Length: 85
Image (cartoon, rainbow, N blue to C red; front, side):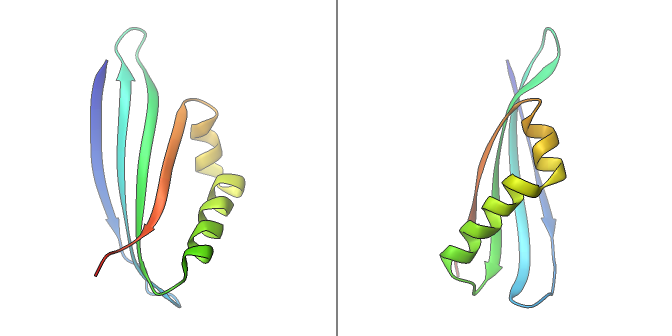
């Protein structure tokens, strides 16, 4: 098995959401080639409470097109956390 990872940063100014960064790490299998698992960490710069962040994560998992497409093909897990000051 091989490991891969990449880091993506985006910035949004909308309401209480100031910035978002996403860390993604995955494992791939060489033969046959495929992703076997993906772990993510979404770091949100916001003053929203933890309950709203948990609700955001739940909605991504339930209604997110990309989330549901990827999770149907491989093991997908992750968290949403507040950016530490």
